[in-house]
Length: 376
Image 1 (cartoon, rainbow, N blue to C red):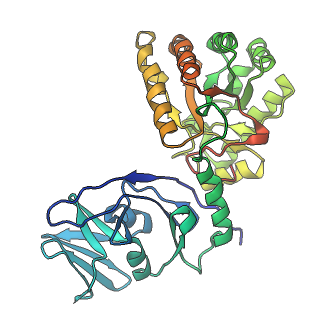
Image 2: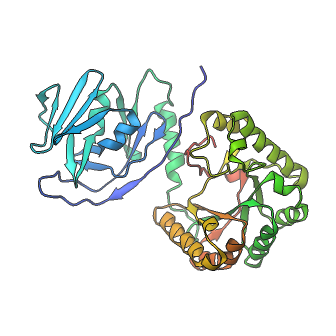
Image 3: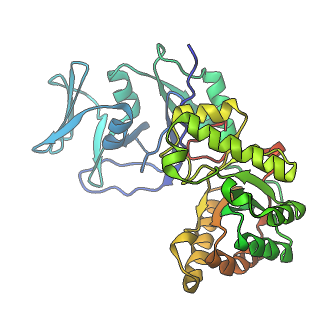
């Protein structure tokens, strides 16, 4: 049976919580929770009395746990077990028998539940990775990555958050979608003026009539990846076959027009929610790598009179990513008129702030996809 590689999602939380009257005291914490091969998203993770707890509503969605709240009592019913939590008495019971500790608590109006407790009660095991402050929920009779390989995966993903020894604040990758067109040529000229490099994701149908622009982009040292042939959602995502055909055709066209082999793709509208497991497997099988982005400029939303909003989106997004520890920040832009007007100020600000502008380097691939899949 072919081993499935689960979707990876990374979310890191680090915050300080205050104690409210009648609610649990909590400690500041940075934690990661995994389910099988998947790092999970949580709006908050708390360590309360040395026990890691997460919002009940959120872990219930991840683990398919039904629960309901009736007159101040929270009920969890699964696999013939009933767990209840009474808010007024802060008492947790299992099958009507009160527990002598508090796996369920309410903090700032939100119900939290112990990760280890709920996992074990519904038939899972929990493995702790102390070095990475990660708890992994898993089932031995399910197909999953070995703990040893999962720790390697954690090293790869979480090392992206480690400080870089370089003198610059961080590496920044300007990426432009939807070209080539006349704005691609202008953006390329602006990049050249500032001695900056970028990555362009071209649409195959646009490439056929813009050979001179493409050759200039390549000559000036930028990397070209494919953004599909049509960008038509109904065609690209019709099936795994139609999806990979669009990517393969784009790759072949880039090879034909530039002589360059490209491994990098950006799927139309990003990898979530349209990319299926079958489509992802096709990318892996055919040797592709996938880039989404860390910072969305939302440039497509604005007119030429609103370029300040594009610039502000980039500045706020980059600073947020940098403060989170990201040393390889990928910015989503488009080959459009409003972006062309905003680009000089974006580059000037990035360079002034000490960021290094780079193009994609196939030999030093950075994992950046919304699936957090290290095979891409």
